[in-house]
Amino acid sequence: MAYYRERFGWSDAKCVFVPLQTSSTAGQLAPIVAETEPRIFAASIESLDIAVEVFGASSVERLVVFDYLSDDDEQRERYQSATARLAAAGRSPHRGDSRAAPTTAAY
Image (tube, rainbow, N blue to C red; front, side, top):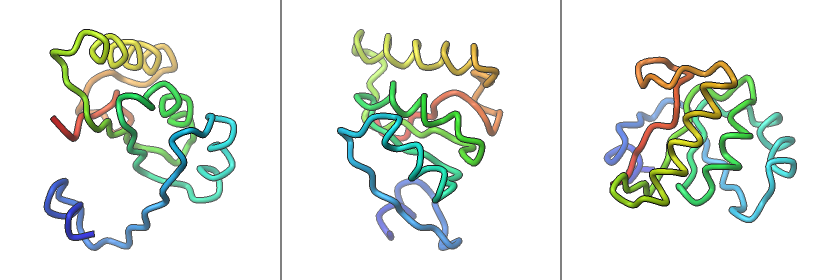
């Protein structure tokens, strides 16, 4: 947990990490997300499409994307597509909004 505190500024504020299978579908993750009610959902750029579907859960306030490189054309297209899908679903693509588009956490 110290790694996450240092890297992302997360505090000791009653955090519980719920690791999920990266091969899971959004349908398989939905009951887990419903039960655990996460406020932050973190996913790699490769899992972003499924994460956007899961992000619809009412408890999720922020989607954090790991391993995103904006100079990689394929990754940038995936990120832009996710941002557009979130905007179409009524989520602001502006980073200042707590229900915003994906936030990049790793470079």
